[in-house]
Image (cartoon, rainbow, N blue to C red; front, side):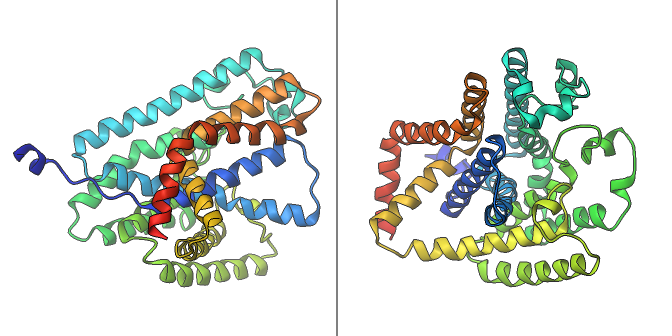
Length: 359
């Protein structure tokens, strides 16, 4: 009994994180299906794909939120141990998958690899040094690097008398360094790694901003703050759009994603606020189709890391077996997810009845 009292209380799971992670993984998979099937889009389809880019932001954003909920109740030593282990596990999976694919895959079948095959940069050494990829999952490597700095973020949150102010200050400092100093144009081994110069990573320093925003809003209770998120992010998105338009620059999200620009961050956060309102509305409905949809989203959202890896395996295997028919991934990937839901049907039913009780 005494031992139980001494153990830190684990934070209650936030279902909104699972919903948003579910949206994120669906959006990312749709982007991959469009790109890797070499689909030619109409103007409407191109606009739809552009809006899907918000899913990438949500993927990183919710990762920051999960760090707060999953590790915040643990001691600093345990946080560090678990987060470092998780980060190195992801890097190991990246290397393992990349090297296996390098040995068996015909990269001439996919035009997206020409940038590496033309320069003879698709070698084991290039992959180990992140100078090229055989599996385009660089976002996971950046996620691993973000996990490595997470113990510091958790320590600041835990030791601060005003944790929300402290994390908010961290966001402001990172944002200022990224966009109001010459850090992105400075050279050096560490700076080059942080800003992904000479490698295929998502710039860790830039994507630290949405990661920290996810941590901060989890700390503040983002479903309760959706009104403030809507107003603040909406205003900032309008201001940044006006500045881009004044400078004659593109307002497409995809044109402001790499490298990550403030406009993309503000628009994506505004999209997050709309999702919060949407899910808040859906949770009040007693429609069984809606409840089933929410249960599926939650199930997908609880396993995003492995689903992300699995869908790449399906895409790669399909293109490997049928190199002249890449559009088949529109059949094989959905078929995999149907099988996944069937395998997880017991858990899905559990989530369904939980949603039914709360509706």
